[in-house]
Length: 63
Image (cartoon, rainbow, N blue to C red; front, side, top):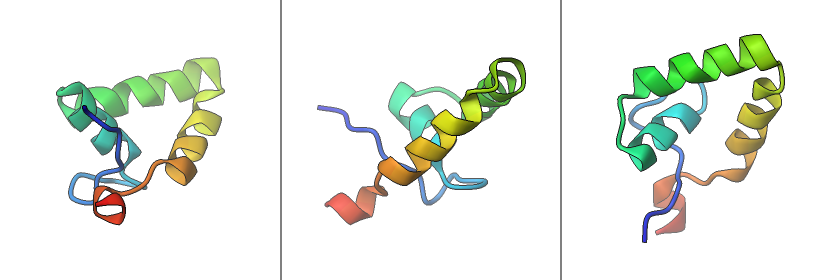
């Protein structure tokens, strides 16, 4: 079963986009661009990112 974690190796700010990209098995740049567009166009993306950064654990914290 796959679980969603923040990335410690592929992070720019908190590792949320890197972890999400790893979970979805896509390029992290695509996830970062989509997140930027979501924040810029919709506005609620920043709140979602902050919530994910606070809630999602790093992989080595759980194992």
